[in-house]
Image 1: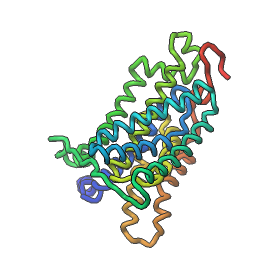
Image 2: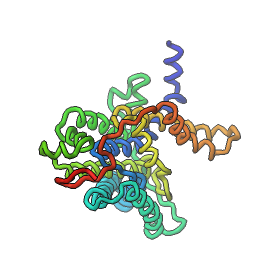
Image 3: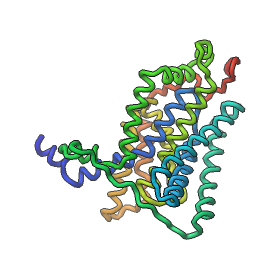
Image 4: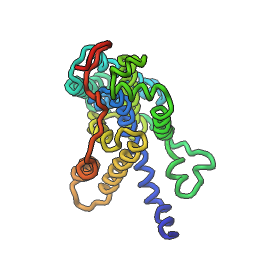
Length: 317
């Protein structure tokens, strides 16, 4: 046991585990937002687009204002706005939720690439100084767990705090119960006084805000720069993690940490010079996600009204 503890406490293992926690943050935020919209009965295929917009907006505002926090807040606000826009199409107008989400993704990927070149020019590579680690007094000195949990950047602490808050919301608050009821049986929820349309709008806007924060984390915390398509499909992987984590905050935490560990592993493997093309190592987190889904997920418990359009006072379509 002492040998195991010594191995875990080694700088190499500690660095790997700490990086796994950081790299899990953006996809965890997106998937956490997905709990709200899917539990309310709305598909958000547009998480990838919301994340890439959050990356650009967070970086641009942080770079121009010299305030990373202002960049993050603005990215969250833009995500909320995109959630409301998507809600207008899929909730108010009744558009196909999959088609609308994919259209949003395509628009956002192209628009962010164009705007970045308009704002900073072609070939420019501006950077911002990323958030620095903020060790928690006393707790950061605890052996093994201290360096792993309590020597992270502020956004990492906020993210894991949001996991706990979401668990509490769905277990202990009337709003959480309203979200669940609109996703399972909107007609019954409406008879009990729940405003289904408003609940779904709010859920989708919360989802957009968390996706925006996840995108901003990539540009202002993880890298300190913005590049085209820097989300690299994390919004789509978040959809898969929702299934793997069974739309539960704690389940999503475990699934996201698995993805973060695979991402950290592929980054470190590239530095070892073992002769494997780096493109194969980049594939590792995505391949692992697909394998885990194929092997371990046997039954998908979707909310009964997920993806089904509903109008106030009408039967489901």
